[in-house]
Amino acid sequence: MSSSSLDQCMLPLRAIPGGYGVPFFGPIKDRYDYFYNQGEDEFFKTRIAKYKSTIFRTNMPPGPFISSNSKVVTVLDSKSFPILFDISKVEKRNILDGTYMPSTAFFGGYRVCAFLDPSEPNHRVLKSFCMNFLFSSRDKFIPYMRTSLSEMFSKLEGEISDGLQADFNVHSDNMAFDFFFRLFTGVSPSETDLKSRGPGITSTWLVLQLAPIMSLGLKYVPNFIDDLIHTFRLPFCVTKSGYKKFYKAVYNSATSLLDEAEKTGINREEACHNIIFLIGFSAFGGMKVVFPALIKWVASAGESLHNRLVDEIRSVVKEEGGVTFSALEKMSLVKSVVYEAFRIEPPVPYQYAKAKEDLVIESHDARFEIKKGETIFGFQTFATKDPKVFDNPDVFIADRFVGDGEKLLKYVYWSNARETDNPTLDDKQCAGKDLVVLCSRMMLVEFFLRYDTFTVEVGKLPLGSSVKITSFTKAS
Ligand code: HEM
Image 1 (cartoon, rainbow, N blue to C red):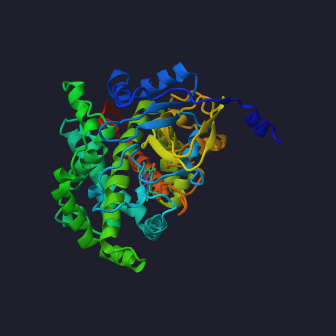
Image 2: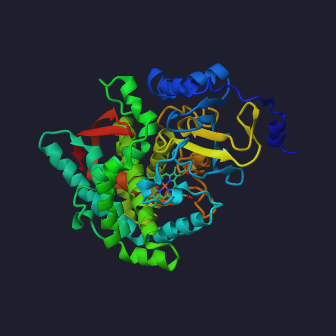
């Protein structure tokens, strides 16, 4: 027996600490602690300290009246977290958003791929449709992204030269929407009836679905008013006409992709709602958080990191004769910076799954029994800042994953799997993993081909960070 498996056998079996409080009031108390009395980080930190464990029982929002069962077993360390990826032991049906699922009216009445468990035959059909599409469009990624980024930087520069702070979020959202819409449909959203309304329509659609698990963070609104969005579902009808426009724009322009879908046995309407989910929720919703976080962390690291990025990016691009897949692969600092941003601030920090059978999970200190049917919840921000794995976990270390540091990539979980794994039709790993990493690297490359350094002002939004660019220094 190896020493590590011997260690594991010797870990004591402990009853899972924590609890759910009295019915109805317990979940509401936890919800108030989570959103208002403590806030997300304190909520978990205080319970880790109280129970002396990174695994414990609690309720997760929303609770009454939206979720019928808000009881979860929380996992907060890097060792227990991957149980959420083990499809042989956990089920991922209808659990994307946690202890509630939005009405399928938001998706045209269909359960789109992200809500399906791999044991459901339609999961394989829809995920393969997505992955085949991504594979066949790979040659467009770099040129389309370069065009979209170049337009974005021109607009940002325009605002700065007018003496204003440039709102990175607005332009980054527009850029991401344009890029993904064009990738999937072949046309720019401005050539359809959506015109420039795509990002606004999609943001409303996202907020209506995700309101039960977010806080609007409005300063002068009393908590009990803010809490109404965690108590009652917001109806789809608010966004119905916008969604219809989005649907029509995709339906009328993505004709060859929809033909492909029909050939593989997916009905045209279902394929179209899945494409909307990919453009609007996965890609636009994801990038809405990823790009501002990346720019925020790179800005916070200051001019010395900017200089190193400039050196690496410009010399590799020169050597390789342009921005190519192989050039991007050679930029070890750029790659590490992107992984570090995903580690320190995972874009989708909440993962849920249901135990398919009675299980035993392990933290660094103990083993715990989970019963079949119990919901497991992981707050990824803690798992990827586990001090037992990462030195100075709360510090942004730009070259953490360079050289030998690459060994730590298996503890980066943003794509709902280890960074060293690749998505398959049998798991729930993000199908867009490589594209997301590529887009993030491209953001840095185009940034530092144009600018030597920059400064920002940072704030908080209900979904991610707000970033205002206060100055750019153009490439010398
Ligand atoms: C920054 C952008 C993105 C982030 C942060 C992200 C993150 C994730 C995460 C965490 C999951 C797993 C959700 C869960 O089951 O708990 C997921 C699933 C998925 N993602 Fe992404 N994603 C992004 C962009 C994309 C893009 C661009 C595509 C494709 C164009 C995509 C396609 C998918 C699909 C199809 C699934 C469902 C996988 C399955 O059911 O097996 N994602 N994504």
